[in-house]
Amino acid sequence: MPVEPWNFSEEETQLDRVCANCGNHYTIEEAPEHYFGGSYGYWKGCVTNCVACWLGCGPSNMTTEGNLLREIGPWLGPETHLVVMPLSRIMLSTPVRFQSRAIIYPPGVARVSELNLVLPKEISESLAAHQSAASFVDKETFARSATVAFPYSFEWAAFWRTNHKHHMELIRFFSQVADIKCLNMIRYRLCSIEVPDALPSRAGQIATNNMMAGALLYNAFRREGGIVAGDAFASVLTKGLGLPINDEDLDYNDYPQDAEVGHIAQHGLDLYSAMLQADTPTAKFTQAMGLLEFLAEPTDFIKFKEVAEIVARYVAKNKLEYERLKERFFDLTGKRDPATKEFTGYRTRIIHIGDRLERIIPELDKRTELFMELDGYIRTIIDHMIKHSTWGFEEYKGLRAKMRPFDSN
Image 1 (cartoon, rainbow, N blue to C red):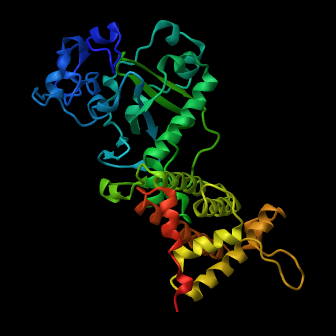
Image 2 (image 1 turned 90 degrees about the vertical axis):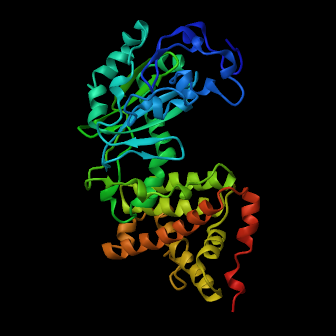
Image 3 (image 1 turned 180 degrees about the vertical axis):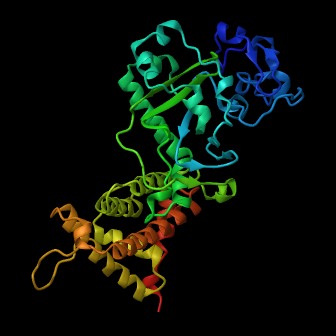
């Protein structure tokens, strides 16, 4: 058997496997060595596919929809494992696939029952395992729920050696990975800043018991896996029924690409998602202003006067509108009353004086108008960055410098 770059152990090469495509039994060591390298690249798929199916000449006698090892398998490796998490407050009838190699499945579609959820005795009988079991989160919990599945690289043995508290931390971490891979874009494209009713839950949270969250982890090379579960999150969404989605609701061309501007846009989506989930109008406002500050200059601190000038470049169509937007940002940030010298700017009153947006703007409809206004600024910038997400940031700053509405007549 080959040694590089796959580095399979003798146990992994001899382990009896079931092909995710045809259902036949096979072992990795049965495959001729020359198929692992070159254009065949069988090392990428040998963990879940027999060599015949990988080469496209094997039978296909299994239902493929929801077959996790078939659909995620090509991206699994010795250090890359399958992560499956329940999703609540999200409704769909067919799986939705994402560029990030994540898939969201309707309830009952992801076939977790086919995974060999067995762990070595020293792990399965550990205190952490008993604590997870006490949550009553099992395979059936995942079968009853919508789920998100994706590949992720982490050290398998080290994960299971940690305690229950660390497992809860890792559930929160995997939930953030799910956000980055698909949920942030779903919230950005399909949810509204002023109506939280449609927001999906955090990945991992269980619909039938919101106090609990879980993650199913599967090592395809070792053919072993398990479930970690517990009270990983401190809060849950309760308002509204959640979000219905269809595959056609999302345009794959909208996704930020893997370049500097794409990474900035991706983090902007993460901050936008956190803003949507803010518990109070005051928190939502401060997070919106912080997001605009980040989008204006993601690499350094700048004053809000400069933030206003950059944001106005994106939004304004002429010099008059450019000046008006700069003045509007003065209202939103640090404006003083010329007669009393008291601060009237919203951000200064909240951050430095301890006021609340609900007192500054007591009328609900006016607060809604404010959030829609801020949302318009944020989306204009993020959409522009997504459009140019294959660019380097210095190149992008050059493009932004040419956006000069103040030069128009």
